[in-house]
Length: 163
Image (cartoon, rainbow, N blue to C red; front, side):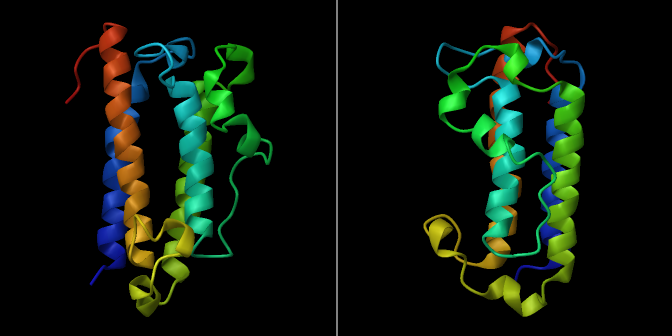
């Protein structure tokens, strides 16, 4: 049985890993790529915000979009190739959007009946998640996967190891 508290704890833990990894990075640092053709952090942050909305909206109609609608296209796979910093946001704006979208996720989670967490996950994500509860847990795992990529960029930039 997946509980609200377990899901909320996982979402908060993921954010507690991500935020320190971003804390000493500048807007310019967000544009660094660990290797050619890998995604830079600026794109990954926009992707995390937009994908969190999309993922959670697969299970709940009432999830709030906490970013401008043009971010859907701005953080597409095709846009990941851009190195034009003017195409991307500031770290401050990403942090605002990350936190607002996460709050929207938590707000939706609190409104779901507990039995809905055990219902089958949405069809587009069924190969990854079996239940609605797992869908919310997947959001935390998705963020942690990207946080792991941030550590490679931090090493490349000569930033201190944090974990």
